[in-house]
Length: 614
Image (cartoon, rainbow, N blue to C red):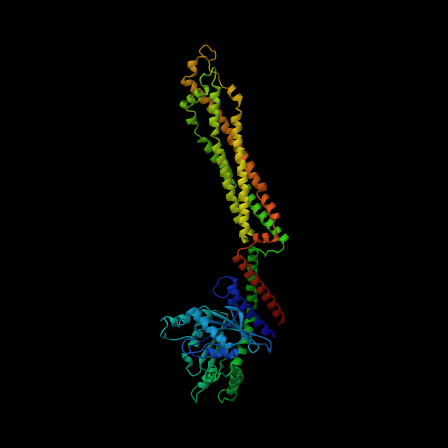
């Protein structure tokens, strides 16, 4: 294969791969830019100008739908791949990737059917292209885009906007700076009225990208010829005009094959008194070689920019592959290692939340510094130590025999009743910290990028973490309740010994039974109990956070997934594989990225090798 064939074949393969991988047209990323950086040939002409015949002559096969009016109703991206001599010709559609067509009449029918699937059996058009690849030893490596024929009026069954719609569609292709315009004009019409030349002049005023093709030379009136056009006197382009003689309708009806048609075309130019001196530069075979040679020069000029875009694409793909993660190994040992590494990544982020590296751990301190003190202040000690309740509790504690010196049983009942109120704030603190820890688990799982691939493992880690947190909460509740019960079970005697004694007017301890049941006496009892409860409240305010941190936060940091690790170690390969069952959409995305990455790296290597061979 020559260097030229290598270059054009390479571009063809990249374009083919871009379309297969969904990188064709319209996007803003490097992939779509790569497609647009690669040169291709857009075939433009008015309806019935002979576009289809020119394409079939280049391909050497009869494969395009025919008829009157608008036949091409969707763009056809036609990629020609030259194969070794003697190899079988076949065609493939992008929408039917696993099917090879060796019967080209079936290709024609599929183009028609695929058009109808998008537009219906009407005369509507669609900008969605059909992608067709033809592999043959009789073609040159080219990418040709057959576009709907330009028209001047809408016919029955078409919207009034059809004229502008077709022109806008054609413009989206030919306005691209890397698009080569193959402007088809029939020789039996005045070149000044050519729709293709008019549009080409607007988008390519210098004519650098335009190749003029004159069809139907054999149908001109006798005594006339198209030499003024072909020799560039009527309308000059930067590239030479090429004349084409298409098959006649009689030839088509007789199923004259394209090989015979090419031979007949060569004979026409060789024996023509008007065009004989141009015979070597006329015909569909020359046109294909001319386009191929021009493509080579364009590609050579574009190699630096194409290489730059490919390198940019490779960088983007490698970055995305790192984000998506590499494929998972199939053996159980590697899978277990992967799971443990993912768990450690989650555990590391969870600890960062607790230790302040990430936000969230401060909410636990908020429970101790705000919620717990506020809850302690709201406890109903005023109601419990009201004069009425104190009298009631003390009297009931005395029973039938009043206390002699101090109502000790009454004191104990009042204190125990008050201390029981601490259970509520203690348990609420445990629950509040539990809620924060659960929320941090949820956030940590979401922030562990490596875990995003594995929804099943995410769910298992979340369930195992929450189960562990439940155990820590239960133990923490038992501990804080024990703290409250310990305060109730043994009162601080020194506190009461330091209390001032009630004395009578003579300086002796009070002994009057009546005085012991006075209002002032009960107020002093309420005040003493309130002071003791206040002391215990300060103790609870300090000890509850210690217990909660020890039983919940510390355990969560040290052993959140210990039970999960034990269970994972007992699982077999298939069970481990289930945990690493990825999101199908993510797996598909990784496969697509891997294919693109492989394509672009191979393209870069091929470009390098072809560049060195120049």
